[in-house]
Amino acid sequence: MKNEELIPADEICVRYQVERQFVSSLYESGIIEIVTVQETEYIHCDHLADFEKMMRLHKELDINLEGLEAINHLLKQIQDLHKDNIRLRNRLGLYE
Amino acid sequence: MEFIDYYKLLELDKSASKADIKKAYRKLARKYHPDLNPNDKEAQAKFQQINEAHEVLSDPEKRKKYDEYGKDWQHADQFEQAKRQQAASGGFGGGFGGGGRQTYSGNFDDDTFSDFFEQMFGGRARAEGAHRGAHFKGQDFNAELQLKLSDVHESKKHTLTVNGKNIRLTIPAGVENGQTIKIKGHGGPGIQGGPKGDLYITFNILNDTNFRREKENLYSTEEIDLTAAALGGEIQVNTFNGKVKLKVKPGTQNNSKVKLKGKGFPKYKKEGQFGDLIITYAIKIPENLTEKQKELFQELKKTGI
Image: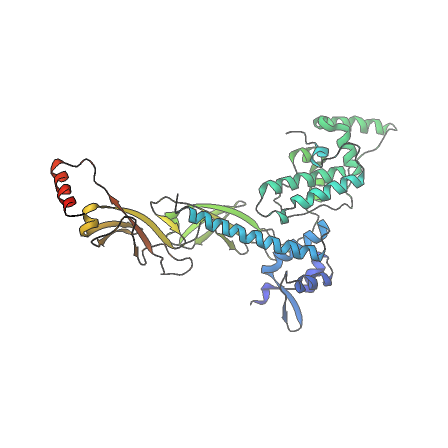
């Protein structure tokens, strides 16, 4: 993993004006992944979009952690269903 | 440019209190927030509208101006000028300052507010409302690319124009209809030194061939003569790379299938690997038989066929 792809969790908290506990809670809920390198915690930039999404929902819609967990789960389900839908549509093409 | 009824958008009447506005906005924002409605352009448009309605109605100054001029918004400037002249001679003041209000950011394009809003409240208010949140990573862009099936049989270079910028990229062979690929760092610029956003391209692949496709396998139907089916023979079949000869076994049944290994579609990101071509035989039953042919069939019938 390249170092420039890792963003220190503390820096993210400052930039986004969120508490460190919020990032830890998202990690504990399995919503985001945290990488620890030499005792410093980082978020991989590929996971930044997920973090931003959760932060927006938390800040803008006042959704608590339990709500974020449920939303994250349901959004993943929607994503899987969407993929399934595309796969089935492509398969349907065989019979049209 | 049409007048937008912000009260109607938030399902409120004109006497709505600040608390009513906040409550209505929260309710609708939770319903239409773009993060909760991925890939739903209608929800995003609706969310932008209610965001705009909230921006105006939650700000006492803007709400006052909106209520005052309403449908006559096009003449608002003239009214304002007249007011300023009155104010100069001891009348009332005006102006539209920013506030400490919360506005939802979402993940929008630049055109967050309507022309109506811009005309009435100006670009400054728009900038304050739409871009208040400091974003670290740049905005992700989404694009749809329409290609023909024959275009994705080989890896090819394509030039895309995204937000006025030409991006030259190689689309790997075997990409699927509806598949989305991420092009890292081709989204919006990062803020305060943050990484650039990503570009997500969803493929819409139109089938311009006679083959049907499922992932890396191709399917086709070939008609064969009754005699070839019964006695066996050799036919020519179409593959993606041209015609090939194929032996038909004696006693081939209608709708039976043969698999041509490696004659299908390329496997996505597996260079040199191909799926199979599955051919279904459709036996042609002869029509308009000559007298001679009829006699021969009668003879066959007598043998028990």
